[in-house]
Image (cartoon, rainbow, N blue to C red; front, top):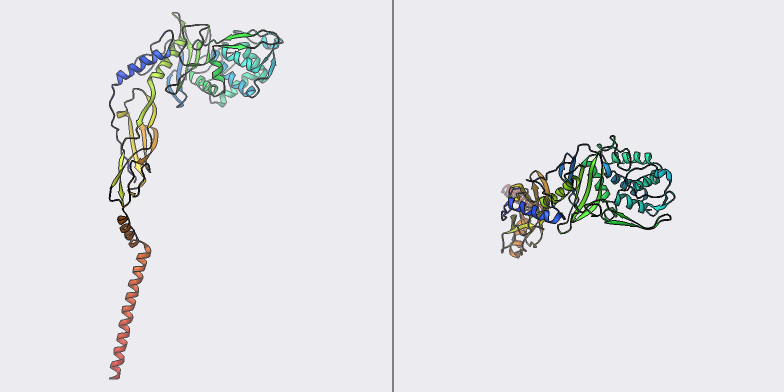
Length: 450
């Protein structure tokens, strides 16, 4: 049966503003320690003193907020996320590869370092941890040369990878993130790179470490390498730790400002977010990459959630049932409850619509409870957000008497029956005509004798 109709499920209406306020309060309590940052007013977070930002949800592959996310900005330390992708491509299945540090390698970096020594033998895995946990530039350069033969060749590969990923607004000139006016990216492109890094086995575990305990080498005793991401570790700053933070990358340059690519997760609600902030300022005793990072994550956890848009107990429609003396129709309900990732303050009664169709105009008994009989489609505004099978709510027994009558009726409509009747009619007509002919012939014969 091909019909559709918009309808609204009956629900208890909630007061949106009260809910939104409650969610925000819970989000703030959940998301910060030891301080909290206001997530902003209305339905969007307020970004302060940064170049660009965005928030992405992994489970639903959805960018839920963007602030100047396509504007060019300096990448600073987020360059090491692209490094990580290429290092993993080169060493992913052989991270135990030993690399001998040379003076030539060490002459090609400036900035933050672990202070590796010429002649020191380290593994790719140790360097990978140092680069990601401490944003160590010497580790990045050593890995780049080991992977590509030279830093220039590695940078060429970085730009090729950006092109392969469709990152048209990203260009690299070095592998450390040290400032170069010719090097640029965007918050959206950085999010794409971070998403790819998230898929690297073990990378989130590495970047969520408070510190990396590096084993002794041939030239150095054991080292403690502390995480520079203040959302994960309090070693460099205790002001910005975040409950649920899973790490990724944080850093800064004087010209590019503070950058952050932070992943955080709420296990209870099965939601994981990536917040990217570029060009954060340091002012009034605050680092605004972290301030805005907190705001973005607090807002995301409070402003979006899984909302029930279909209940498996909600009657959608009725379908006529034939061949039963007990029931003349059966009701259909969704096969399962459907929850969809939506804004927490979305008015489901006003913004969610439904349409459905059944496979047949009617069902023939016997009917089993749970039998698939149609499909319902759910839309949020103009966006299709889900479909679900419609199933029967009850079993309906067949009346054998009605079934017998139906078989007779069906037989009388069959071609065989109609052909048989037609043949019988033709035979009858032929018999009548033949009888009449013979009778007439007999009469003529008798008349001729007289």
